[in-house]
Length: 360
Image 1 (cartoon, rainbow, N blue to C red):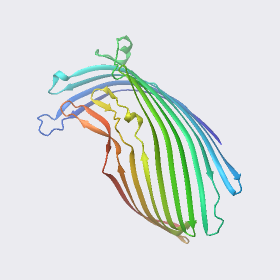
Image 2: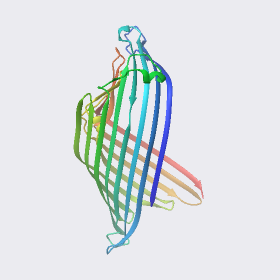
Image 3: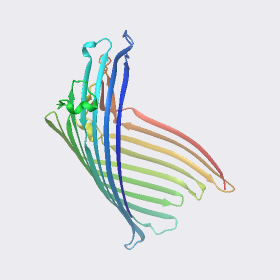
Image 4: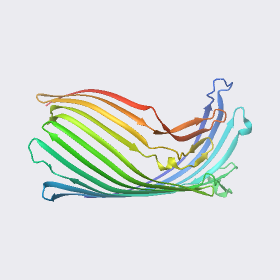
């Protein structure tokens, strides 16, 4: 099956943003730290294409009924973005820190990705009416590349977008950058399912070998980060009972471990201060995130003349080294800094009860 697709979008935006930052310090005599007015103009164009190919084939390798599925996917996206803005910040009590500036930014980006996958499904490895043992093996290779840069220029002359071409702009080397990111991943997932009458055990063992690299050039300095990782995400499900054609009952206990690597953009130790009041920092010391999840679920369904479904479940999740952007606010200057951090002590629990009725 071949599934090609393409898209194109073009947007223009202009407007004036006026905001007032409230002073959060209770002991302060003022309730307004600064007033900010921003005139902006932006033009964005995006286009891309995607192609997918998949097929399903039966196999006869001494075990009748086995089959293999393969799929191939490719995607390409490109974006051009041009922005011009005038920014004015006026502090209520610190007039020496007032500023007005004009900036223009050109932000072209492009990315591509492709994936090649193969999935084999075996028939039962045990020839018995009551006992079955099924095996499934999936493998895929994926690669994605992202490239983006920002050419940021500024001046201190008030202007409108129509006059921007007549102004002499100065390159902001500190906040102009070119960043590329390449990620390769080999993923293999063996799955084994054993069933005996109404009891079943399902074990899934997802493994990935990942090679990731990011390079950045800004402020006349080149930085990079490269890492090879092995990620293992096992899961186990025990079940008793079956629900077939809207009738039956089933008790299921499942659990899994999910390891997630930090985004490479977070690991790059750079600072983005394009907005002088909202800054973004990287953190090269981030650790992988790990979640432990478990769910106990019971379901019962009855058939004619009125179909009824009763379900109840309880789930629990605990996450170590959760990655989140920490926010630091300076109440004296109004500057907000976002920096990714590992956070522990995260857990989540949920209880569900459900009833559904339908006349057949």
